[in-house]
Length: 257
Image 1 (cartoon, rainbow, N blue to C red):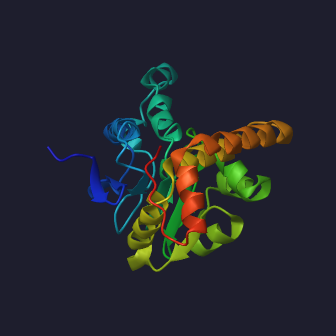
Image 2: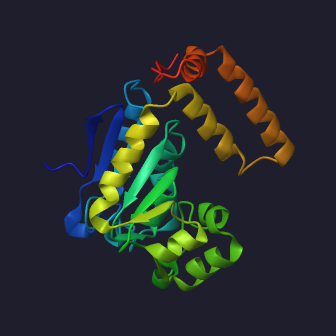
Image 3: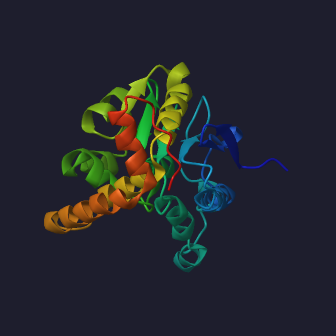
């Protein structure tokens, strides 16, 4: 039986996670969600992996939830599915994640992309939260992460109208990090991931943790956490290696220690 999600180690500390349901435009059914959670949980324990590229392939990222699983569901059934546990495995992943988005990233697909730290979009990509058009609302961060990414007025337009936002506009409003030619989306993400993977992993993990905390804590608390994390990094071998390599005008070799 074909796997709905695959993982491939690309070398140089990078893994690529790919949704594999092209016949359904990579719609996020239960198997996909479980597969993503399992893979991210496993990658979290793999010290050889320092960055992850998340993609749906060359044609589509993920066109939303699989409505065939949802159309007849009742509230208690939806609660008992506890799909938030699958999403949490990605949200809690402590290493850098780059989403490479071609084609549609709609509904749950847009929410999935927003779980990444960086979004590289092909110029033909389209983003949206069209749940209102089928009688519901975003349920995996579309009313929360989207507000934090683009602000109230852009977010409200997207979630109240269900409109599609092309890649260029998504870049302008702060939803994506970079827009490239469709043929270069995945290569750009992989190249960036390999560059990140060469950097000190402990510092990267601290940066990600502290930066994401800024969404949830007051400024003074965030500044305190930033300062303490900055100070803690001076106890790592990588800090000594990085600064000595700079002084000695050579390339650093980071060991994650």
